[in-house]
Amino acid sequence: MTDDPARKRFLAIWLLRLSGAVLVMFGLVIAAGRFESLPRLAGIVMVVVGALDFALVPLLLARRWRTPK
Image (cartoon, rainbow, N blue to C red; front, side, top):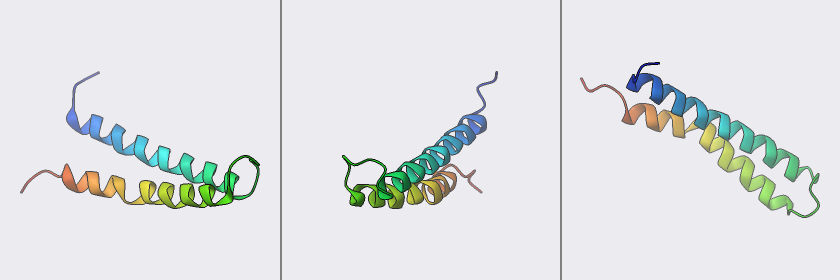
């Protein structure tokens, strides 16, 4: 396995997208009322934060890590 920075960055972006998708799924479960101990609002907040994590954070990182011209 090499120490290629592009490979590490790709893995970081992939893991961030995965964590965002998992957060959305858990938020949907909580918002549906499957966990009585957690308020529905917490699930809705998790869905919004997870969607932002899934969509925006990888784009921001890719822009930051872009090769300069």
